[in-house]
Image (cartoon, rainbow, N blue to C red):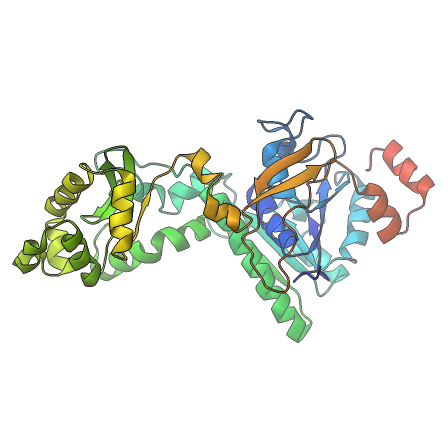
Length: 395
């Protein structure tokens, strides 16, 4: 099967989530990703709970599928020497150590680009490699807070609330992937590599501030937390048997909603005429919609609104989403066959490319699984040399 990145080789120094999510996306698009791990330990996420009966972390499997694992001790001079030999053979390096770590190892961009002038070197960290916060340690929740997301999330009378998934980690991974793809395109034209510096705070701000910043800089208004209601006809509403999401925004949608609710008389009242006026009486409208949804089941509400071409959906429990017929029809639940743990269900690939879709069923590697392949076949080491490197704790 042809893949979009089938000729691209990536040397992956990443660990935890933000970095591995980036290289996982590259692997899904067909890149050969060689993951460098600490001998005897590996990526710390290998020990994360929950684990399969075979002792593999589900989290590790989920973001390291399709990669090749080799062990290499970068603290040893011989390990760094071998690393530089590998750099000559790849197109892309990805790392998410704290700023300065790779430079101290002699593996920063300036050094490696002298070895491979066409190298694309992508770094991601909490605050990036420049600026007054660059040395600060940061994880997803720090980036959510410092990127302006947390202050906007939650209920008006409650505290700022973190998003339940590691969204800043994932955003950094996606922005890094986009940057690498752009750099590959640039290199295909010019032959030149380049350095990429991705900040989790930057990526979060780019999303959290997309609308809010425009309002703030334009009017001076500070975004407020709105809980589950953005305004009167946009949010989560209670039904007799659960919750529904209604997303009515345009004038036409508002008029259709009032007809469905049997409230056509409101269309003639001045304060309900346009969106600006309706925003001023959002609480009144919200109460009207809530009273209407509270008398009906989720199924009734969704059918009535969908038949009127109005956006609405249930808020299904997670187990229902995980078995959703729409997701299943688009192969968004896949099964990988792990060497150690056997068959494990995972999310499928969102990349639906007609000619180069990639393979979402490739397994995650066990630690050092590809040592022989990479060191012997790629670098030309002999079996005896491989055994000696293992005995010396280099691999």
